[in-house]
Image (cartoon, rainbow, N blue to C red; front, side, top):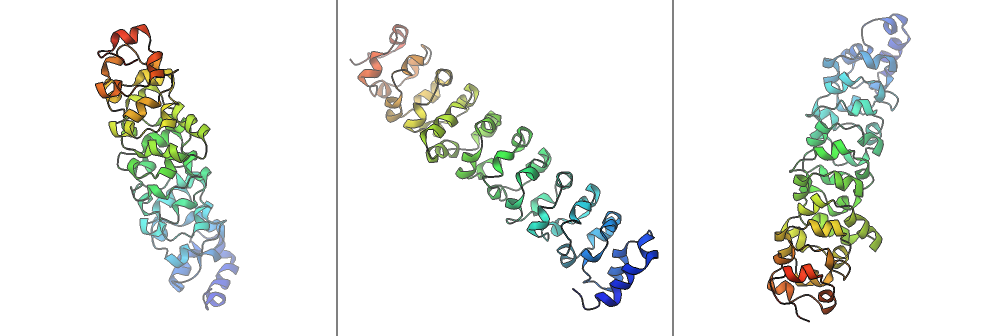
Length: 311
């Protein structure tokens, strides 16, 4: 605390005319001492700080704000902070922001949130970010979201992620999205995940988690898989595909399946391939089929096959 606190501040706080006046105590203190701790200002005075006064706050003054003072800033006042000032807030101060205050951050302020500040937001605070705010996080900031924060993202927030942001999600983050959240990503968005969205399933702790994630894909999402994503599918993922999902594969996607993937389909899945899909199989894929798989081909599938099936 400044040495001149008792000399300058204490008398000011004790004077009734100052407390009741329309002149902010901050303005008076700023004239007397540039290092005066703002936390000594009565909380009721926070709300009357002007745009100019807020922009004039020093790093020292911002970091002197008490937890109970942070929520007293109005939404308009939050917008008054210079982007650089946002970086000065302590982590415990960040967690003192209300949802209304967070929703008032400007697109210019968001990119200034630091690598230490972003992970400290609570899931409840994450809910407060608007779609516009989500869209202006820099690609470098995306990996900073924690696996505890990821499940908090709402449908509107998920839809706001841009093609520049999506590739920056880590495999650990992608794995922490819930099945319901994964279904929200648009077909266009899914393309930008690359192989990551497939490979993350392999790192689940148990097989039931893998199945749950794979089954969550809609037919439309299956059709949005790129060829590299298709070839990244593991045996565990292949055997988890449902009838509707298998029927959703496009001819080009089927031709991207590797011999190992072909042999991974179980005998209950083989009949799911339609007579339109069967002609798409390449000769080397047909040769990769096992005897057990061939034995369950339906009459329509056999007729649709352009190559003889080995028996």
